[in-house]
Amino acid sequence: MWKITRGDETIVVSSEGPFRVLSSAVLNGGYRTASGIVNVHVGMDYDHEDPVEYLRTKARELGLDPDTTIGMMTAVDMENGVIEEGDGVTAVITAGLSNPAVADTGTINIILLVNAHLTESAMANAIITATEAKTAALIDLDVRTGDINGTSFITGTTTDAVAVASFGDESPSRIEYAGLATPIGSEIGRLVRRGVKRAIELQEGISPRRKPIDRLRERGIRLDDMLDLGIALYIGDEPESVREELRSGIEKALEDVNIESLIVAAMRLEEEAAAGRIYGLNHTDPVYLLADELIGIAIAEYIAGSRGLFNFARYDQKKPGILSRLGPYLDDAIGGLVAGVMSDLFNRKEDARDGE
Image (cartoon, rainbow, N blue to C red):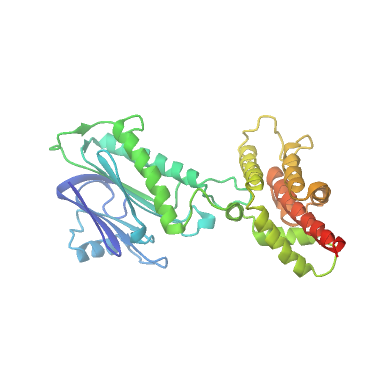
């Protein structure tokens, strides 16, 4: 049976005897007979010239044979590692994004422990299955490369490693296939998809259900950009005071599920357009495309009525600031949001003056 030991700086996997491993690990990667697997924490400033020798040294410090130990490394805190146990398989996962705003950097390490004898081809199949599940988890979390139009899903990070460990021929169970349609493959997919999401949430605080202001920032649309946009067409006194009121108004507006839904719709439509999946869209922002403006109109009018609608027209025509850099759907969604909040501010100011 498998033994998993978690320390402050390492996660170590061992068994009662030698076992077989297929991996992309730094130390002793490839197809090997192994006595242990170790995942080692290193700092973000790690700059060791020879990572193989570094891992061999760590293995010796742990009392392991460096010639038969499979070694990985990661900057993830070991306490945030996840152990998912299923039917005949256990997944040990550490996952981190060294810069969540540019999420293709970082490390996701996956160790699969199978309570059976996988053939060599089944072990390779298991790595494919685990990689597909990891990518599905990243899409579930909606993590991206930081493209301003939010069109770039990531499929993994820059230094990912996978290890599949299996017992030898003496195991009573022999498995020849490990694709998603098989029982073992289905378990691998389920555990890895769930485990990667849990591990990233623990390490980075990123969950699928996060605020729209955060999802906009991940797409390169910062709150300060929206404030600059609002002030760009403002005519009046005390712009800094108005800017702070606008900040509060945008944050409050984005807490409304109806506005959030329209913003998310614009995000998704941007992706569909960029990927060429909207059949009738042959250009970036053709004159016959009205659906984008309808989103902006709906947001502006929902927030501030007719005044919001007319103010949106000003922003849509002039496209100041960040609007000139966004795609056809998000520029109108953000324009509608800012125009609506700006109009609402002045609606309330007028109401206050009228009430005096």
